[in-house]
Length: 142
Image (cartoon, rainbow, N blue to C red; front, top):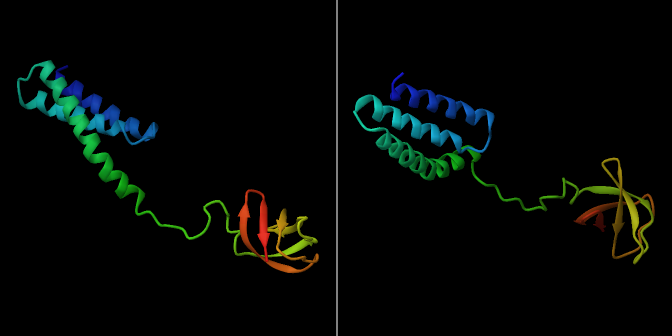
């Protein structure tokens, strides 16, 4: 088996490995192995020269390709105007299940779950209120 074939088999193994081992890095070493395979096939380059082609092609494809493909595959970043953790809770209208009497918290029901809630004014059980913020497991309502 000649070196061009060995480099080609290595390239295929590395590129296929990218699908098994996520991280979007291994594929670029596969590109380097393809370049080394081409050099071995078309020239009489020594094994050391083929190794250098592998290293240089791998690093160049990693540096240049990863930035381009990562942006292309992940799309554009869309900025959110809400809290990333609020799970759609902030802005919801909810029902008070246990009266809120500041400074004592009460309870509200959100999507079938009971949450601790605080407010600036007393709110009786049964009233509908709007969630204006979330601090960990405590909701602020009005």
